[in-house]
Amino acid sequence: MDSLIEGFRKALILIAGLDPELLGIIFLSLKVSGLALVISTFAGLPAGALIGFKKFPGRGFIISLFNTFMGLPPVVVGLFVYLFLSRSGPLGFLGLLYTPSAMVIAQIILALPIITALSHAAIIKIDPIVKQAAFTLGATPLQASIAVVKEARYGIMSAVIAGFGRVMAEVGAILIVGGNIANYTRVMTTTIALETDKGNFELALALGIILLIISFAINIGLYFIQKRGLLQTGN
Amino acid sequence: MKLNISFAGILIFTLLTVSVVSAEMRILCASTTSTQNSGLLDYILPIFEKKTGIKVDVVAVGTGAAIEVGKRGDADLVLVHAKEQEMKAVEEGFFVNRHEVMYNDFILIGPPDDPAAIKGTKSAADAFRKVAESARPFVSRGDKSGTHTKELAIWKKAGIEPNGQPWYLEVGQGMEKTQRIANEKRAYTLTDRGTWLATKDKDRPEMSVVLEGDPVLFNQYGVMAVNPEKHNHVKYKEAMQFIDWLISKEGQQAVGSFKDKNGNQLFTPNAK
Image (tube, rainbow over all chains, first blue to last red; front, side, top):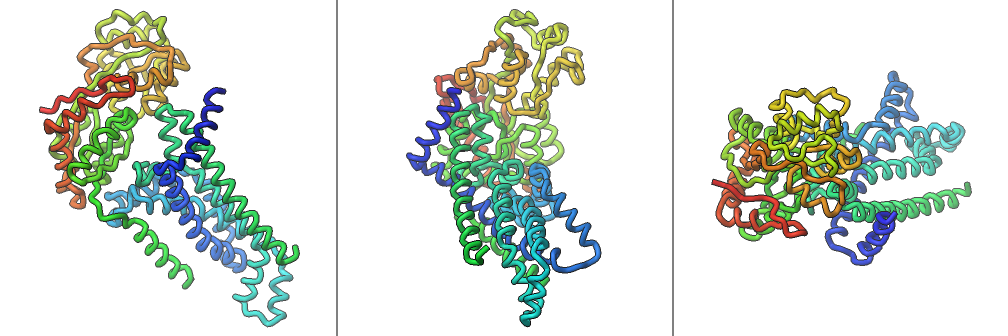
C-alpha cells in the first residue's frame, strides 16, 4: 500500500517538476505512437473501405486474416521486425534497427490490422440505402463511397482510438526493435519496464500514472471530435 | 491501388527522415543488464563522451543475446561476461580485439536460516549438491546470461542435472527480478555481487549470502569489437577508440571509482 501512495506522490512531483528527461521520453512516446497511428489510419481506412465495398475472390480470407492480426502478440511482431531490419536481415542496409523508425514500423504492424478491420466493420454497418441515394443524386462510385465513409465516421473514430490504445500501451515490440536506448529510443512503456527491473517500483508506477493521464487526455480530445461530428449530422 | 503506391512512397520518405538524427557520432554497445542496472555505464560513458565527443548508446540484454546482436552486426561492440562464449565468438571470426576489463564475483544467496545447511561450505559445487540433496527450491536465470552460464557450469561440476527437477525454477528474467522471485519462494539463487549490493537495501529481501570466495565464482567482464571484415558498416574505428579508452589507465580508474549509493565499489578493474 505504501508503494502505491508513494507512486502517486512521485507522479505528482514528476509532473510538477517538468523533468526534461521525462518530457523527452513522453515526447518520443507521442511521436512514435502518433506517427504509427497516422500512417496506419491513412493505410488502414482505405484498405478497410476497399474490403467493405468491393466483392472479390478471397475477400473472406482477407477479412479473417486482418481479424487474426488484431491479436498479434507484440513480442512476435518485434522479433519479426528485428530479423528484417537486422544488419544480417533483408532490410539491414537501411540501418533502421535500434532507431525510432524501427519502433514506428513495429507499431504500424500492430495498429494497421485493428484500424483496417474495425473501419471495415464500421463501413459495412452503414445502410446500403446511403450508397443508392448517392448514386440517385448522380454521384460517381468514388463519391458514393466517400458518402458512406462519412456516415461511418463514428465507428472509424472508434477504430482509430482502439489503434491508439494498442500502440501507446505496447512494450514488447518496441523494446526489441528500439533497444530502449537512453535519450534515443526510450519511451514511456520501456522506461516503466526498465525501472521495474531495477526495483524502482514507485518511479515505475508514477510513470504508469502519467501514461494513463496522457492517454486519458487524448481520448477526451478524440471524444469531443467524435461528438461534434455527430451533432453536425444531427445523429 | 495507385493511392497505396504513393502512400508507400510517403511512408518510406517519412521513415527515412525520422531516422536522420543529429550529425553527432554515436556507436552502439550491446551489453548486459548488470552493467546498466548497477549504474556503471551511466557513470563511465559520460566521461568518455566528454573526452571524445563519441556518444555510446547501450542496448542492455543478457550476455547470450548481446553476443548474438553483435554477431548479426547490429552493434559496434559488446561488453559482456561469459569468457568461454566470448572466446568462441572471437574464434568464429565475429569479433576482434577482445580485452578483459573488470571483474566482480558471484555469490550464492538464500534464506537466512539456510535450510540446506550450506554456510561453511567452501566449494560452489558442494553447495549446489547440498541444494539438490535437500530439494530446496533453486531459482535459475534460465536466460543464457553470463550468470546463467556460470550456474550451469557449476551444476556440471557438481555432477547434477537440474533440468526437470521439481525444485529447479527457471524464470527467464533479469538478475534483480530473479533475486526477488527467489526471495518470495524462499529459494537459493546465484547472483553477482554488484546486483546484490545494489538492491539489497532497496528490496530488503530476507536473504543472506551463504557462499562466496570460491575461485570458480570469479566473474570476468570482457569487451570486444565486431569484426569489420564480417560487417563492413560497423563503426570499428570509434568502437576501438572506446575499447582503448576503457582498458587505458583513465578508463580503468573510472571503472574503479564507480560506487553504488551505499559507497560500495561494484567492479574491480583488471585490464592487462
